[in-house]
Amino acid sequence: MNLEDVKVVKELLSTPQRIVIVPHKNPDGDAIGSTLALYHYLKGLGLEAVIISPNDYPKFLKWMPSSETIVNFEWDMTTARTLIQEATLIFTLDFNHLSRTDKMQPYLEEASANFIMIDHHQAPSDYAKVTYSDSNMGSTCEMVYNLIEAMGDSNKISNDIANCLYTGIMTDTGSFKFPSTTSKTHRVVADLIDKGAKNTEI
Image: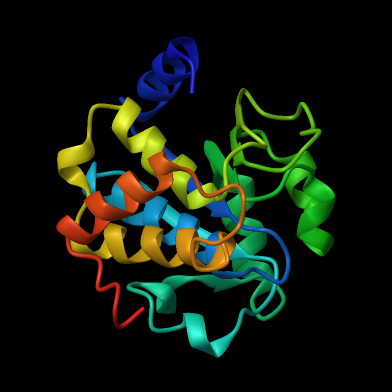
């Protein structure tokens, strides 16, 4: 993440915001892990945040801390639409085009909020004020870790954040065996374990 983008994110988060965090449709471990980790980070900064998922996600991810707070767009469209309309800042995580949110797409396109994209897929769209895109990264969770580190907030990575990030990194790297797994990935994971990630349970 370049210094200019970090500066913009810092400026945006230095004032009160109504933040919505969005994963892609049919969210996997990386999508849920990254959104929940970011949620806990933002709440730790004293900011108002909510996650809206386009639809439901697997039961084996529902142990994750604060997963019960996620708003399901398909189940509660009225609440979700209101939150999107009132948002001042929207993070989109683990997808590169708003079409990946399915029925949420038109409401996101109509939103007046600033957007921040964090994603590791190729050919990102240009809808965001800040686009942190790197297709060489093995997971969006590792990118969220990098964002927190770039913000100078590594000391704010709690047990909950560590568990969420570890889950997403592990699942999206095929338990660390895919080619996108780098030595930096292992250093990140080591730090997350030191910060409370329950790797054996996960």
